[in-house]
Each structure stands twice: as C-alpha cells, then as structure tokens.
Length: 296
Image (tube, rainbow, N blue to C red; front, side, top):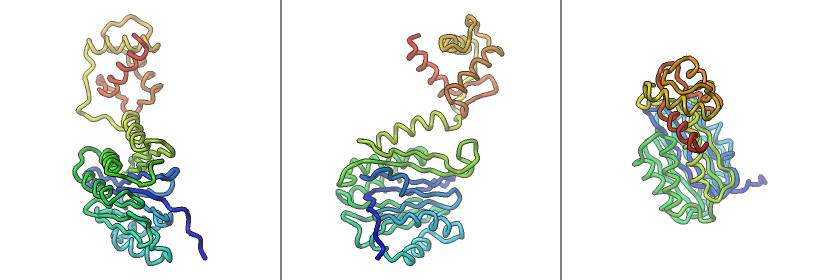
C-alpha cells in the first residue's frame, strides 16, 4: 500500500490580476519550507496550490492541463480522478481567465475547507476555524496594490483570524508574469520564501519590501529631474560614500553620472538606473538613508 507523505497543514490564497497579467500564490504553514511544496504557477496559464497530504504532481500536471485549455474546474476534476488518495488532498487553482476551483477531501484534518470566486481560490486545513479562510477571501478581494501585496495582506489577515491551529513556521510568495523575471528572461516575477521563522508572514512582508526596492521597475510618477540643487545633494552623498572625489558643484556632469552609476551598481539598484537627467525617487530616498547610516 502506498504510504502517504507528511501532511502540509496550511492556508493559502491563489490569485490572478487580469490588469497586470499576473498569477500567484501566498501560503503559510506549520511546516518547514512550505514554499518547496505548495505553490506552482506559469504565466499565461494559471496557478496551483497543493496541500494537506500534498500531491506535488498536482502542480506541474495541473499547469499542463490548463496550458492545453482546460478550465480550473476541469483541471481539478482530472487531477482528483487520477489520485486514489484524493480524500486526503486539498488544492486550489486559478486558470488563465481567472476561473477558479478549490477542493478539500473528506479526510483532511479539521478545520478544513475552501472558497473560490472570480480570480481567487482560498483554502486551508488544520485551522482554528473557518474564519481563517473567510479572511483570506474577503481581504484579497478588498485589498489594493499589486498582486504580491494583496496576497501577503490576505495572509496577514488570515493569521489574525486564527490561522493554523498548530502554530506558524514558514511562508512563501510566488508571482509570475510574462518576462517578469530577472532580466526579462523568465516568468518568475516574485519568488520569496521564509522557510523557518517565528513570524513567517511578517518576515515575508519585509522581504517583499526589499524585493520591490531592488527588482521592481521605476514608476514614472517617481521620476525627479536632477536640477542644480539635487545634483549638489547627490554629489555630497556620493562623496561621503566614496564614489565622488570633488567638491560638490551642482553640475550634473560626466563625473557625477559616472559616480552615480557606480553607486547604483554596487548597491544592486540597476533596475532603477537612468540614462537621462532624472533619478528615481526610491533611489534618492535610499541614498539619503545611506548617508544617515554613515553619520554624514
């Protein structure tokens, strides 16, 4: 007889943002490195969360079915029909059109259940109560911001509503979009994991903040022209940081541009680099904070 793997007591939210063309999963569990098991997604195809006595084949197989044009519901039915241990499984899916499906087997440990709607599927097992899943769904639908931010906000609300009745250990966030990965070479737009932490969702939120700083593109609304006053300030910061050797003049000349380019490269801010006479407000704020840390 096939031996079932260790159960993954978890709550997760699978979501789709049609305007941004993003699919993603947010998940938290009293289970080490839940991000290695539960979340699966492919840009233009959909997303899957597989948990409880998790059948990890549901991830790649489910995505393959949806890539062939099956809906989330049709995909779920095919996955379950082929699994003799389906009553131990829990799964949530959202397809390329935002259609969703969720399933909780009869043998999942209570409280266990899920709710699905347009662009989302929320589910959990071994929870304090159904309030956790309700908070996932309601918060995700009401939240504002990027898909990644909405997923983390929903996880936070779900934890506040009770969460996993065994406690907390790990969390993960996976968001995909076409050419969203580093350098535009794959679809892994956001891929963050907290494998073992006392407050994994809070830590996931902190990491998302850092990820946005280093890997998000410049918002055009954050562009600031480098006038004489700002050029002088930049020169002062770059001088303190060791990138600019001259006295600040207020001229945005080649020496200043070269120093700023070197600084941005060293601080891993390349995604926000500019070739014109503008600077990303996020970069400027970072530089000002850096100067404060240097005590200058």
